[in-house]
Image (tube, rainbow, N blue to C red):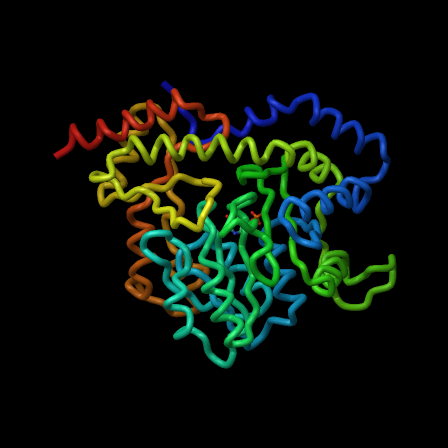
Length: 369
Ligand SMILES: *Cc1c(COP(=O)(O)O)cnc(C)c1O
């Protein structure tokens, strides 16, 4: 038996003809950066996310970085981030020259805990980056209310949550601006790097266009010192071919998640908790166990791929030694990182394979002391 953690080839097999058309269109156009494909994708993705503006950028990290820059957030400023997230969320803040200030998550949803936000806010705080971790929306109404009261920006890190709903509204439309990643493994993935910013703030969208294109809106006229961070035509064409499939593929993830939630042993594993206002898109299906490493080995022996998201929290990474956090500084995040395991999940996993994953998890419980 061999069940991979994620099958990246299957979605492209399903769309082979459409993808070939996309390649041909770009080849034939003779135009490879900032052309018709990017323009159309931006319109289509903005509509999908229920926002006015979408700006294609180089990747998800750049999307967050450019949002911070465009808001003028940098040296001496603080930005609140989850203590448990992929390090890119923190790196975007560091890139901008600001300091990431970690806040612990809610134990049940793994998303930033609004009740802990207020005490982390200082006069230097300029923004909160809320991550919709594993594809489940954070509690945005509570976060927005605190942000409004303290006059700070709310930025969504939506890199894992394309298409998720919060109280009936799409992720990407819930704060001041949102950053998306189209890294190949994401729910909407390119065949290379890509990213986007979504927002209803026209001025912000315009600033990001300028910043991501060398600080220039009119070619060779540079208003500011910008960056090179662009979604290219080929990736945009691929994303346009895949976007119409996203809802169906997310629904297939939801079916697998329902199967897991119904049939995994909730006494032996901590299963994901979904608040009634959340409609997650299951970028990852994450279980928690104090015997995580043994469980992963057991699955591996059964030929089943699994991964840990993530093994080391950002505050304990060498890269963030400068912040001086010791082990124990963020105990909730640290316990999560010790205990989480991501089971196989994806639109092409199938119910039969999911059943085998469930059986292999159960075996671990019955055959171990
Ligand atoms: C993938 C990811 C990013 C970064 O996206 P890239 O396109 O790889 O730069 C940022 N935040 C989160 C939560 C992610 O999962």
